[in-house]
Length: 388
Image 1 (cartoon, one colour):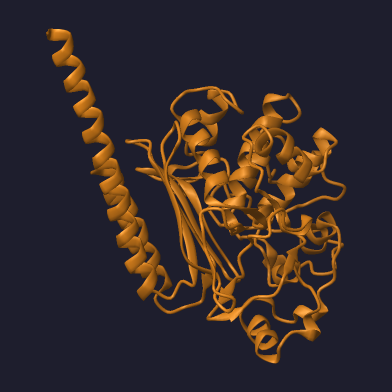
Image 2: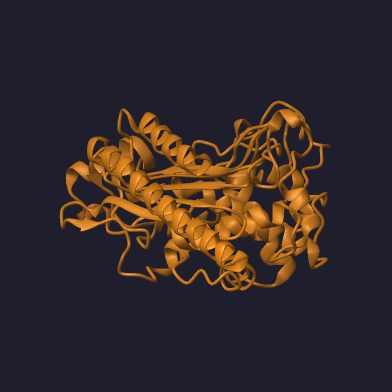
């Protein structure tokens, strides 16, 4: 009789749990659908993950509103600066392999010298790059990294918007090796070299977010491993994590389900970035959800694609707590992750340090008046349902 009672109670509890989970999912979907119907984001997907799995993933709105193609959890798009977290993982992997050390002088690995003209005797380390304390600035020439395919054949409205908001004279940009791009900005012999490309504060004393820090790091990884950066990422991150719907913009879409990107309701053209490691990773919330889940697992002390010691370093504040920076991860008092924004791409991926739950938002829209408020509201809803 006791066995019968316990079996009944266990079965009842399972049914209640399944019913509650279904109710939660339906209620969450309803709230997000309502937000999607009234906000300015053309299409987006979200995910809630913990250290073991993806708890919720779904898409809303349109990946292509002209063709009425829905945005789903499997829709892929660039994720902008969240791509930098891959550089953090790759850097820690290279250090585990004994290929480099975070405190190495970057000039050991470069074919030219990068020297802050205001502090010519100050060493810039890889750790400085990874924490945005290198003293480097992106410079006014950073927009030259954007290579827009067939720019002159684009609609006049699109050309004008790109040139005024994201790319200046896009039609003049030339595709060159990323190390040549870096040399032009920071080498004293570079075509675009200016003293104003550097901070007037000593290396390691000031946080200044600089996209090119990632590009230099990616080049160093290539030099010490003998592999292209994108191949290194595939071998040590995307392949082990079975991220089959993920790659880089320049490699072409690995899925027909790729989203159109919209800036102020204008469809953005296909474009590549010379400095692709800083923001051109393409993925969806399912693949990236597995990645973030793995990161949370590593943060909690487990070995996986990195060992626990590497995770501890990567996700701890470096150099100065005021910088709120780990190794290419943003480390705050309550959360760790990264966000991103580029032409038609706005993204968010953070996890809570206490409850070890992560939240992902990939959107295909930028440059609208209420975008930031709308994204905050979506994240608020995700957090509400993950704590109930």
